[in-house]
Image (cartoon, rainbow, N blue to C red):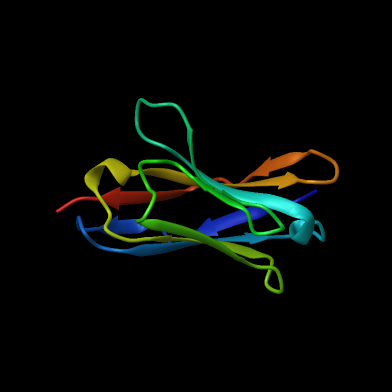
Length: 117
């Protein structure tokens, strides 16, 4: 069983920055694709960014050039650096782990990011 715990959300003004963290338990972290997803009020959950164990990254068009996903395998942690935040980035951000060996996936409970003046 893998547990994911997100942190780092909060209220930030437009143009500001936040860094989200997702700490994972379990020994499969280094063999998992890690991702960040978000869900805004009244909308479906959508992909923000993913990073494979080999370092391949995918970003949603809406965040390219502003967000960066990174991971520290020694700490079993994945990060999402968010810069130049916009009100439309307001959402609950979820961490997801996908085992590249077994195909199982796990979700964190989410952390709220609010971008407002």
